Image (cartoon, rainbow, N blue to C red; front, side, top):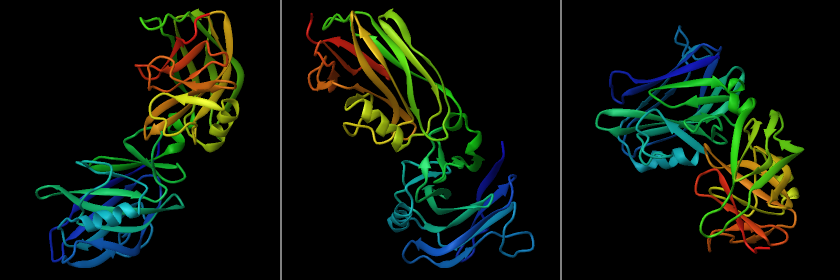
Amino acid sequence: MQSNNFTFGNSTPTTPPTTGVQMVGTYGPMSFDFSGNYSVTEGQPWNGVTGCQVANGTSGTAANCEINVQAGRHNSAGPAQFFAQNVSAALCSWECGGSMPSNLNFAITGTITIGGTSYPITLGQGSPSGGEENWWWGGPGWQVCQSSSSELCTPDGAWSFSSGNEMTTQSQTNVASTSTEVPNTVNLNSDNGTSTNAPPVMFTYSGDSQISAGGQFGSVTDCPTPVMNCAITINASRNKTTPVAQWFTANAPVAQCTGLCNSTQPSQLNFAITGTLTIGSKSYPLTLGQGSSSPGVNNWWFGGPGWTSCDPITSGTPGICTPDGAYGLQEGNTDPEILVAVVSPS
C-alpha cells in the first residue's frame, strides 16, 4: 500500500515563531500552495506561510515537503471559527476534544496536490495542554471515511488521512470496505417475549439488488427455513450514494430504520436488496438497505409495498406493519436487530 507520512513539529521559537508541518512522501510528488487566506488570534504577529520546500530551498513539488507558518501562538475562538467555516469535516493530531476545535492559534487554507490531483485543505494549530500544540486538518467536501471513523477522506474518496501524532495518507483504492466485498449482517428476530409471541420467520432473497456505482456485490445468506433468529448477511462494499436510496424507496414507499433515521426515507445507501419475509404461514415483500446514520456508524432500513407506519411493540417507538396489519417490524434492542411482532393475532 502506497502512503505518505505527515509529521508535525515546531522549530525553535522566534518572533513570531515558525511552526512546521512536514510531509514525508513515498508515493510520489506532493505540493502545498497557500491560498493567502488565514486567521490568527487578534494581537498576535503574523509573517506568512512558506509552501512546499524542496532541498535547495525553493518552492515546488517534492517527495519531502515542509510547510512553515510564521505566527504567534495564542489560541482563541476566532481562528477556530475560520477553520470550521472552511471544512465539512476535520480530524486532529492528538487531544482533539471534539469534532471541531473550539480555539486555535491560527488557521490557513490552501491546496494540497497528491499524485497529480489537487484538493482544498485547511490546517490549524491549537494548544490542548500547556506548552504543547496539536494540528487540525480538513477541507470542503472532505468526509469521515466509510472504512474507518478515525480517518478523513478527500472529496473524491481517493485518499485517506489518519489521525495521530503522525498523519498518514493512504490510497483508498486499496481499502477493502469501500472497494471490495465485506460481510454485512442484520438480525431479523421473532419477538417471542411476554408482550407478543411471534411465530418463526423466514427471509428469502429475490436476487434483485442495487449497489453504488463501482461497488462490489457478492452473495446473500438468507433464512430459507423457519427460525426464531434469522441472520441475513450481504457481502458487499460500503459506499453510500443517492441512486441506491432512490431504488430502495421505489421498492419500499413506507420504511423505518435501525439507529438514527433522521427522516422517513434514506437519502443515501450503500446497497439494497428485495426478498420475501414469511411470518408463520403468511408472506410479505420486504426490502432491506444499509446506510450510515453518522460517520462510521451503519444503520439498516426496512420496508415494502403496502406496508404502513405503526408502533407494533412499544408505544412511541416507530415501526411498520404488514399490508394486512397482522404483524409489525420495529428496531430491536441489539443493533443491528429488527424485531417481528404480532399486531393482530389471526
